[in-house]
Image (cartoon, rainbow, N blue to C red; front, top):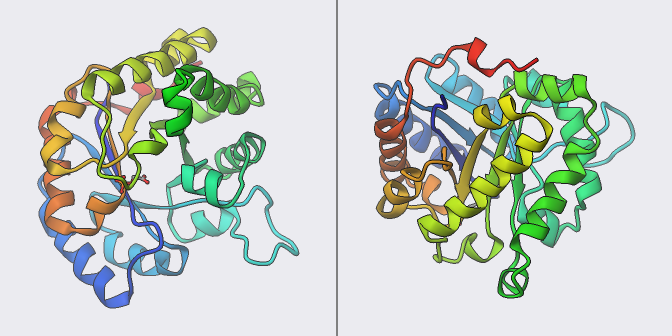
Amino acid sequence: MRRNLVVGNWKMHGNIKSNQLLLESLTDGLRDLKNSDYVVCVPNPYLFQARSLLEATNIAWGGQNVNQFEEGAFTGAVSPHMLTDLGCTYVLLGHSERRVLFHETNLSAAARFDAAIKADLTPILCVGETLAEHDAGLTEVIVASQMDAVMATLGDEDFARAMHLNMVFAYEPVWAVGTGKTATPEQAQEIHQFIRQRIARRNAGAASKVRIIYGGSVKASNAKELFAMPDVDGGLVGGASLNAKEFEAICRVANSLSSNPCLTEEDHIVS
Ligand code: PGA
């Protein structure tokens, strides 16, 4: 059984003062929500602040991207170990803004994924089609190619490691990210099911355990119908994660719908 997961993606927003207000409010608001997992992915300069404010709470923090190299002459890059040094447990990979605006490829997502799991970071691999691809009926082809590029590079040991770390997939139709348009619950379910079936081709046990979260204009007002779908295990939330009350409301929905509050670490381990 799967616990719901809600991940806030702050993107390039915030400052020391506003972050503090937001995180203090979330700490307070989410304290009693025990049935789901909650994460904020903050800009790198504020990871230290996130760590000091979230350390003893039920909210985890993570990076929005990571480089595949461990260290060296890579100006502007941040390594997986730097994220873990700052207490991160999660990292977003292959977000559509990285793909579209910064020309990151499936290949680079695969390299970053590999580096992340080797550093014990839980990868959240974002996949999703553009509007043109959607309109051309290519959604499954695109999502499969984005998944396969990463899955194909994982040997059995790495796959088991990724499962042990509870790797996450995020289905984010690019046409729904930051646009106010949301996939219908049925559209989301169809692709989430497709993603799960694709994982099942590799390992059926893993497929039933992997969390697949939906992203793209998730709000308090649409979270319930989306998260209620059988293969939607929570959300990746951009804009709405910057508003404490809105994000808390989304987390409350996930918490109330979590199918099994008693997930143990053992449930995740797949040989
Ligand atoms: P949005 O962003 O919720 O603002 O659409 C989602 C994301 O980019 O992860």
